[in-house]
Picture (cartoon, helix red, strand yellow):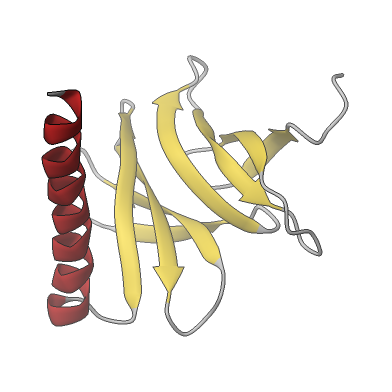
Length: 135
């Protein structure tokens, strides 16, 4: 019984991935963007976006800052070295944003856990990876 349920579930999962990729190829442009999280403060909204480009081999982090009503959009790059795959963004409690995900550092092929703290304009305050010694 377990085997019968497992195979259809895998088939559905694979179909879902194909549809998502097909959607990007049919309706998207050279960039693949995914919103990771939105943090609000008294003056606006900060939405963390991961972006992969078919014209470059790097995945990067962008920050979309808008007014509370969504007007006045401003895009900022979040400059963390390497290929970054951010999976979550939350308010840090002090008006900044905590990111977590993974990174492949320049010149390396292995992937490390990533935690970073950024401002609402995308300035990197600090980063930590699982390759760093504990401080």
